[in-house]
Amino acid sequence: MIRRILIVEPDLKIAQEMFLLFHFERGRFERDRYEPEIAESVAEAVEQAQTVNFDCIIMDVDLPEMNGYEAVALMKTIANNPPVVMTAAKNSLELETKVRQQDVYYYHLRSFDLDELKSAVGSVFEKLQELKRAGKPSIAAVPIVLKQLRLCQKRKEARNGCDR
Image (tube, rainbow, N blue to C red; front, top):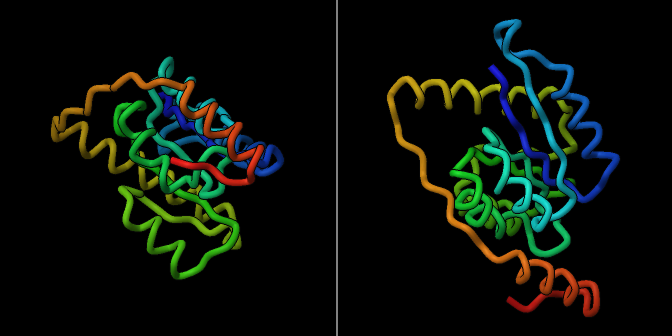
């Protein structure tokens, strides 16, 4: 079974490390494999999610247009409600509170090793198998306008902030 993962990470070096981690990884059975894709921004992630049905999203908390925890609901709506694993380089009580208020499956601090991230994603797919066996329906995708995300990104670049 092919398990599609969208990695939303603006730092290309980190994104490539995650890509390689999953690209060569196998699931519980030899026929199971991961198919990761990279998006450097929310706008790119939305574009990809409108054409590919991702099974899991790994999303950084620091994204160009908005905070990752703010993009969770948007991505879940667009991408047919996949589990989200949120990643962060640094943590604070305030940040962790904001992340945990969202519908995030797992919160991964990059100060931990990548094996923990791999384990979290493996857990996501085990949970998806359970839901599939239980016949739980998925949420229908809702189209959105990417123009607003791009405008927000331009404003942030111009003023180092974004009005929402």
